Image 1 (cartoon, one colour):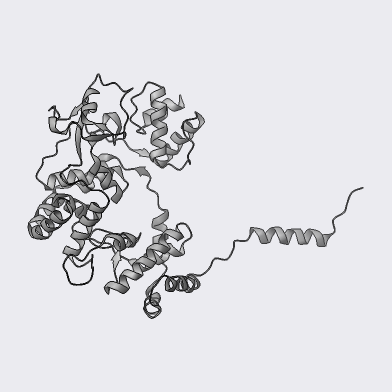
Image 2: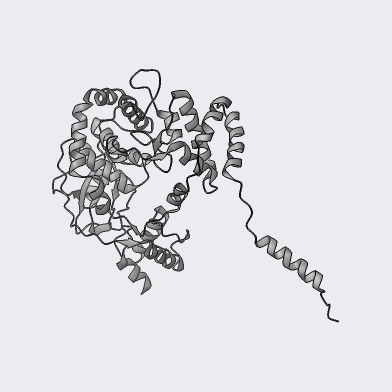
Length: 397
């Protein structure tokens, strides 16, 4: 026997389903600030100071937009380098060395980080202090702490920044949309852990005090493992008879081992006999057909500052030029772009063939590069881990 559902039951089911489809009303920014204030006070921030500055914290929709933004194409080595290691920046680096030689020398003697590396970071981060950002840091961090995507991380950053404001009499600081500020664009937790009073005035100001900023940068690099007396790396060439079955990109081996595998300085010289035990990794930012580098332990220290391989290469190359070394690239300048849509197609094909298990997000990170290397090795291709249109065509064939 059929059960007949009356009109009232149908109406109830409709309302129930419709109510579940409605978006949950989000907490307002002002209500969130009240909740945040209670947490901040528990973590040691003075209630009176908090009451004074919280009205200055505003919701910035542009910050959320920047946090979600994804470029159309992946930047190539040449794109990245041309914008950052410029002749003007090299000249400014040398000029700033002359201006702040005493400050830089003091930091180098104290922390073991040479001046040209400090200058390279300074140049890349803020163009030697000429552009530290235009976004109110308090509001940027407040917006990102309110936004749910990375709330835990940015709440910690916001609390740290308010403590910095409270302890160092800083106010109305402007920086990047992501909350980094000062001459070297420190995040607040980095400031809390590594910033020092370089000028001895009893407060730490990475925005207005060059001695504070320079010594803090040197202290940070030293604390995370900078090895005094070592360079970052150099360009190399892979000989035509190199054994790709033995070469493992980004896996350290002594220089003498790389030499045995057919990898030599790009200028055709031999390795310094005194450096043959130095551990090094092979970096191919544009695959086997682009510039190739062997990098030393300090390169990985640079990457602790910024995880981008292209950023770390730019620091090393800019530091060399500021120090007076001439940089000549021996690899041909080929600059083919690879889009995020192509990267997603590549990830999808690698997953279909069993090489990749990660997200199809177009991000050519470590997991994707490793999947490419595995595929290349099993298909007798040079395992450079580099995504190209040619590789995508092979996967589609």
